[in-house]
Every structure is written in structure tokens, then in C-alpha cells.
Image (tube, rainbow, N blue to C red; front, side, top):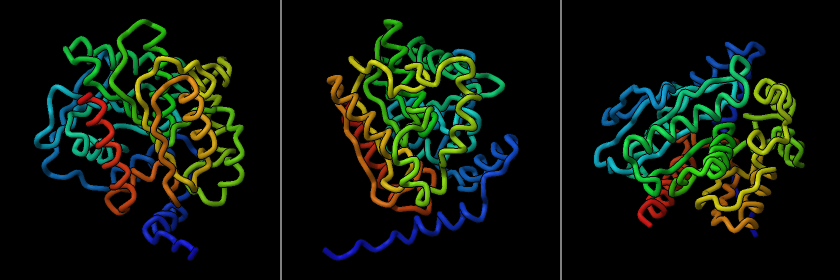
Length: 299
């Protein structure tokens, strides 16, 4: 078979990331991630409304034609130590457009100022807020990327264990589900993924889990009992260091009788969706997630 030609768009993004390496200081890291996502303009037809969701700062986004009875509760990535509403706003808004619903993004508390379980408590509070506002559980989708994807998985487990009604589905983008970073692709994909490296993850993981074991199921959902969870869409890039743990997580969910759709996107790096305004594969991945969410919430 002929050799696949490299994706020129992802190579251009690699070059941009290489020119802006992750700084050493946490405050600078936070500003860098906000700048990455915030560098893309928000489409003019998107309505943004700041709010509070169960005491957690949050914001609604809505594209024309959105079904107000359906909602995507979104948890941003950033290793539990960075990321914000600003860093992920364009991506979340586009997801809402593709899924035909409103989005509620949570600005959950970050480590190390607020270690585990603060982020999970905020995620539960955000979900309870939607229930209190009258949203039917079957018309709620949960979404998250990287640490937010791991947090979304932990949220599902926590909601089940607390006896709360579960949402209709969940969309996990490059989810960080193993805070020990123990899977082989951490090394085998290190040269291919400019976004996430094992030394960085091992540096920030203790900031989040603190005195709690990194293997605790609500810290690293790869170790959780996944029985009874709603349908999942897991999207991961073939060129990212989290590839093996995400494939393993999808397999464990499937073995627990969860309906899982696993998509491995060729050549894509960690959370390539962030770059969707200049990356066709990012737009296609968000569109695929929109179709999944539409189908699941309609069912």
C-alpha cells in the first residue's frame, strides 16, 4: 500500500507548539493555555452568558437553533492545574453547534490550590444544578478533554455511586485516566506528541491527587468499576502519549457492558480539537461527536 502522506495542517500546529514551549512557572503555563485556545475568534453568532452552576463559576454558550431542552456539561482540560473557560470556549461553542444544544462549561477549582476532590465536587455540583434547573438526565451529555475527560469519567462513577440519575451519554477527548502514566505509549509516542510528555504529567499529578493515591478510582478512572455507565464516545489521536491508556479504558468500559465507541484518529496529537479553526481533522472530530450526542440524547 502507498505510504500515507503527512497531514500538513497538524505539522503546522506542531511547529507553532514547538515555537511556544511550556514554561516552567505555573502562572505562565496557565496563560499559555489560555492563549492557545483564546487566539481563535469566537463566531459572531454564538451567545455567551456567564452564570453560576451550584456555586461554581460557569458559562452558557448557544448557537442559533440550539435545542434549549438539551445540554452538554463540559469540563476543560489542563492537567487539573490549568485551563479555563477562555482556553476552551471556541471548541466548546463549536461542539454545541454540532450537537444542536446549549453548552454549560464549568470553571472548576484547580490544583495545587485546590487538590482532589475539589474538581470532582465542583463537577457534581454542576450536574446537580442542571437537574435542579429541570433538565431531564437523558437530555444531558457530559464532555471533557484530557484532565477534563478523566474528570468526566470520574463524575459518571461518582454520580452512579451517589445514586443520582445518569446523563444520556459522555464524550471523552484524549482522557487522562491513568495519573501514574504507566502505559507504553508514554514512551513510544513521546517524539510524536508535542502537547503531553510523561515527565510533565508525573510533575503535576501529585499537585492534583495530593495525599490520595494516584490509583484511587476517582483520581484515575482506569481503575474504577465502570459498570452501569451511559454510552461513551472516546476520541484519541494515534500520535499522542495517552493512546494506550485510552484504548485500555475503552476496553475496560466495554468489558463492563458499557456501550463504547472508540475512535483513534490517524496522526492526531493530544486534544487536536482545540485547533479546529485551522485543522480539518479537528472539525471532523467535533462533528462526529455532535452526531454521537444527537443520536444518544434523541434515544
